[in-house]
Image (cartoon, rainbow over all chains, first blue to last red; front, side, top):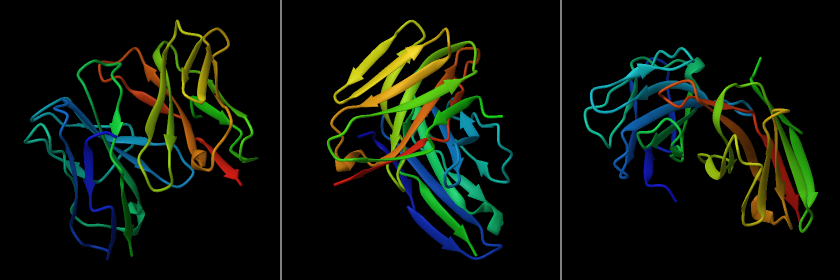
Length: 113
Length: 114
């Protein structure tokens, strides 16, 4: 079992609210990632980080933002939630090499009403 | 078009039976191919990681094969158990990027019935 945690696990929130999805890992990994996954579809990379103070946008355009102030913490923020943001958000981390295994958190299921 | 195609999309088998899941990909060059198991509402968990030079790799009742020439991989599950019910995702790690970019298939949804 990987030591990577996400909170909350489930979130139902109204349109226009600001939300922050938390992700923490205790493995000391430099690289961290956020993926978005809709039911029956593949995972899409929306943000990644090579380390502290490093953040980059992924392949799928997202209105969310991320920050990496500490190695172990990689929160994702939506300033104004919309129904189109309804999805599952998965956080992952890996060691420094490009071929290292990625360890995934349990995910946050977000529903915006 | 997704660069990782998996078949079948879904599969139902009886407990104790074997099954084989398929993965075709176009990602090239790649550094490794991974199979993940994803339980409903959970994050993916790695089953095997194979480099392009490996042909087969086992992890308990799971055996993955790779044919880099035809760009095909399979995951064979032996003596299935109810707990094997999950989505099985084929993932290719791109060799060309420092990030180690991953290309995901949509998964095969396996259901094991008692």
